[in-house]
Image (cartoon, rainbow, N blue to C red; front, side, top):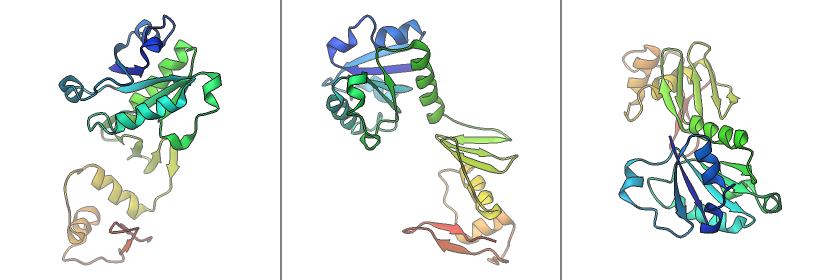
Length: 208
């Protein structure tokens, strides 16, 4: 796990700043000035686990850094944590697009939890009982689904479809193939299962 810390050089060099705090916590850290190039081959090959943007009092500078980061393909999906002071907190808004925030001066334990939360949110794994894809968590045994810890209510048909598609990501299936593989219906017979439009060209099974 390594963390990219982005900020003004004066903020990055602070003895009580994010770089020093994260290193004291045992994290591997790289730094980038607000206007450094972010398209290096090393970053593309091994993106960071999370990005800490040290905006501190200047939230607008943090927003500008976020826009630049989102424009770099290999960094666009990396979770971002913005660090602000109490003074800067008033200028922070949920619409800015940061994944999380932390107050500075840092409480090391809090910063560590924020980083681990970002790591967990972006992680992916699957076993016989749980499938996790980013913020999506599928409890196969309990037939429950949550996104960012919030439960999502699905019908049995919707859950079966989601479980199948999450286990076969990157593959394309026709309606008849889904009927056969998810619900065991052959020869295109829906047998009470129908599909309805769910916004644009997306489809989902109707309740039943």
